[in-house]
Image (cartoon, rainbow over the protein chains, first blue to last red):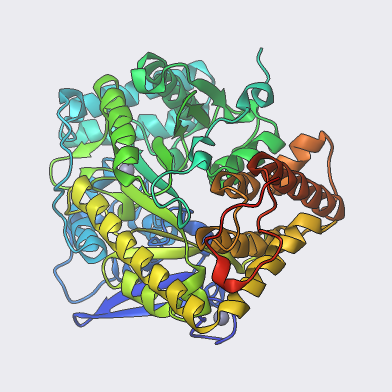
Length: 170
Length: 379
Ligand SMILES: [Zn+2]
Ligand SMILES: [Zn+2]
């Protein structure tokens, strides 16, 4: 397949976007994709499906006419990434991001996968209950202790602030 | 301490021996992404946290049966050439290759017998993979699923009641599953049907990419097809779907080859024989040239225009004809030109050995297009 922008090189980046319920596919070579600001490097070797994310991310968190989501303005309390960081990198920072940015992510997941409901293998392990804030806190305290022990004071200070914030909310 | 390069050996190359449809499908791969609950994802975690994750996963990996006898390496223990070799074997990604030296940042576990492995702290805490020769998605899934079950019983994984297994990139959420096949479709390329078929693939929830050489050109008519979505379907459904579509592509490829054989037999035969002739005699071969010629020879073997080499030999050359493998074999740093010379020597030796093993040259000496199924000449 030939690149749709230059019509010369082989298309290596395949984008799919959905606008007004119409699915559109764009096929670009690496050079033209880069010109459009789409990095093929961000797609891992196994997941050529990664680039569509760039399109979707553009929609995420944009102050559209839809109901604003109040919790989106604040960064994730556990890893500290903001909606802006997420838009820029296409990666969330921790599993709690899926709780913190749940509303936006649900919409994003629906657009990427056509579904937001997992249908595959289940995982039954009490230790991994995401709503378990105490578990999260103890994990963060453990990391804090470790950071202090290794004199990683920057991380320690950041963790201390975040633990404090979470405790305040309880 | 054991030097990684001494034990790397043939690890991860089990697939080379082939499997179902091995003339057309090189390998089938299942990759599963998982993360540990309570730790930031690798892209967001500091050195200490990353080290904790490596430690936890190593402790679990050492206890599970599906990785029994496996080896564990911190990426920084591996010299750069070893890492390149692992990339050439598709056992680690380029991202992991670039892991910062000095820090205990990322790791790799490889099974002893099978092409199973676990990447630790790549984009996700755990990327486990199973690779089998030929079309064998179910077998690969059984291996990957077993590793996942065993690791999940020992480690707290990040799981959301609605979104399923959580991953750093939302495109992997849910099953965390990426199933793929590496397929060789020169017939579709030569009949110019390939873009239609690939377009069709992308319309049924699958995605594809060409196999690249050292540049950005697709070489050798090899394509990787994989599932695009990971959420909302069961693992079995995703894998069955890919398997069924792959079956269709194989069918299209076969009929394209029949068309070529019927309409332009001499052109096809000439192409195949030229490819073999160059590989068998060249004194310098660039990687891309080698891959394109291997494609021609593979087509010839598959259509029985050539009686040797074996598919296993062709797979072997595809892996060991790459630069890092050649450099390791030479035991010295190679310039591009030196690598091309080593590559040509390796290929000639391999093909000559295969001819000897088969007891004959790839043809009967008198080759005409009608005698494609004739008996092998005595050696
Ligand atoms: Zn272009
Ligand atoms: Zn987070």
